[in-house]
Length: 312
Image (cartoon, rainbow, N blue to C red; front, side):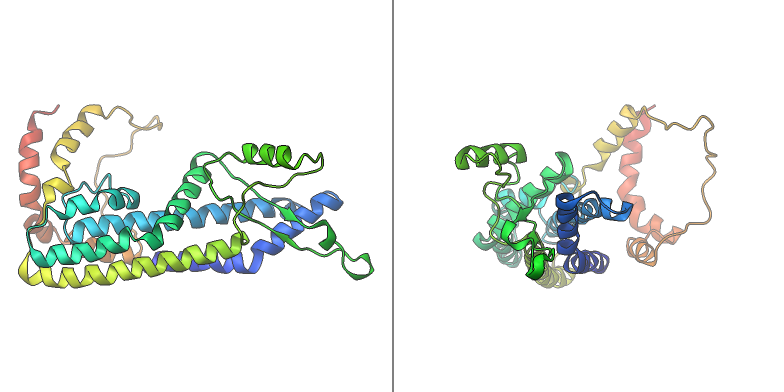
């Protein structure tokens, strides 16, 4: 989680230092004239880029935690399909498949964290926001108080806030149309049903709650993992990774070979460049030394190789 924490911390710093100033500058420029340079013209897009990045990263982090929960407890659920929302909906039923009392107790505590009433509203809202931004596009919101545009001596000042919608699934056009119909003012360009605080505050709180939730789940999983190391090593691998059938299907359905007119040589690479964190992960998975690969993975893949021998 160290890389994710560093990435999120950068986004939080960027929001804290720039978001409000950038949106204020962009909005005021649109009120008083055209942007003065290219950077000024694209700054609002940079804010949106970072906003989408934070929403995507937080939901992805929660989905990764869901996979860790399935693997550590362990639960009979496929790793490829698991997400945090799916885990919240199915976890109580999945716990019933655990035979050991200690595992069931640990799983119950994790389940209470995953599906707690305190987390339901903001997690669902964050998931909807991420889905809307990733699959439907941006929804910018500018709230400008006309009385605050000018300070003493009519000096222009920037007091603009960016507020996110209560329900991101409702199209922004619908909200603006409803707002104007309700207020019946020709000049009204407001946004119906925004959150009560500015977007920067919303993101700060989302980050804090996500980190606290992941940390609490991680502590529970660390304890059950330590217990399993000495008492219960059985893992429902075939339920979690139904790889044999997937592997054969992938070979049958593989049609796309790329766009390059000249095929790359099939000779295996002898030099691999990777980040130290990737090397540590591969080494932990016994993928660095050929002898470790044969000892750890040989038995796992032997049956699959036999089953796929009839695949052309």
